[in-house]
Image 1 (cartoon, rainbow, N blue to C red):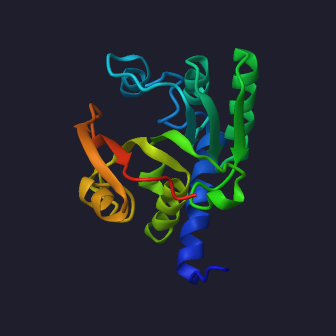
Image 2: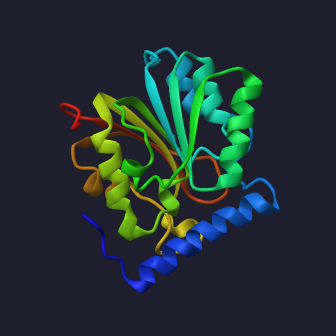
Length: 209
């Protein structure tokens, strides 16, 4: 079934794409630091570490975290909207000698991306918080359909007040309302100069494949 989008929604999607492309054209965006965040390291290597399985990174940038997961025994797929970032991520995976499937795709349209799942872990470093509101249900549906029972989603996001933009940002209340079939099991404030948080969600029940 084809979706119908208004002219304003199409303009918003195009503006997001241009912004992301501009960030990578001009250099590294602020979220792409070449350092795997300690929150992901704790989930992968900490005392309650997850058993390695299949992982999908949403908005992978230049692939730092996808490579990290692959080095720790995960079978990794990663998607990003920006061609330039995808090329760099593939180069980074090749240089590291790890097998990561990196695809140029829209995280709100995963049915078109060739990432069938199921996945045990989803990782999102400030991707969801920049998605236009009218596309966020598509993101949730794509993850839910690809989630193994008990799958985790580790998400970092900026609060709406971080940049004074009511469209961007993410809150715990929104995630609770939008992620039907998931439980928000942890919210940890970030250490950034502007309001941010790490959110951990767990998929309940059986995978919807």
